[in-house]
Length: 351
Image 1 (cartoon, one colour):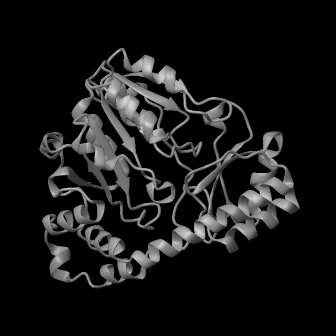
Image 2 (image 1 turned 180 degrees about the horizontal axis):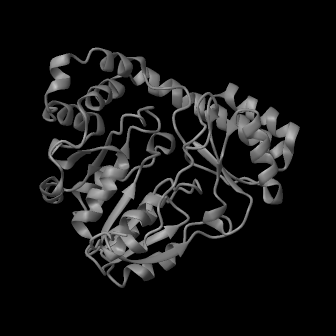
């Protein structure tokens, strides 16, 4: 039997990331924090207008970069276009993390932070959110005294929904001038809290955004990495030349221009969250405050029965037991009020 040539030891030590992506067609998908109504019609029309000639050539980025920079309120030289947040994280870690260097994470959080750090051969230091999902500010500040190469934070955090105040983020940045601090703002549109303007003041600050959530373009993979101009030069140096496809660029341009669609969807999610939280409270199902488009709940020992019953009714939630070391914790994507009423009715029948 033949054997493979050597590969990186860090890859051999990794656990594969296996999201549950099968059997989702036709279901009410409340398991991946996606937009539950679809993208803007203007974004869809941009895909339909793509010509044969445009599909046959490599995409041109400069116009899209300029237009998106204006939308985000930054200079084009402070923005790197990426294939979703995953690609932005991979690029950032490829550039700043060397084998054996320290990366600090606060878990539970987005699994891809650990995934890419492990792949890079980093030495990972893990801190934990508290029992009530409170952010461990003092342990983080103490960890930063050791001058790690990178500290990654989702704000709001996935799956806890925790929002770290800007004052705490400022203390973190001031305490770690020799550490790259990456703030993942994938759910910014729902929280309204950002540190993006700070990239001018803090050269070690990195910010990521995505079009996969509020804008409804998860299937096209569009994201952005923002940083100080000098840092962006390094990231572009290490980036593949054409990471984002032409259809994704065209859809992203139109998505930011359709302000009405975004405004109405955010309003629907806010109302839907009120419907969901009220239903959970009536059923006395423990849940944690969230600043994002999802809510973390604790079904306790009944989680398997509830999840299976919802699945039979065509409703998918995300089981997060592996993040907490016990059965019960489930993340629910917030959809429209009608979608949340459907979920609450199903929970009432199962609880």
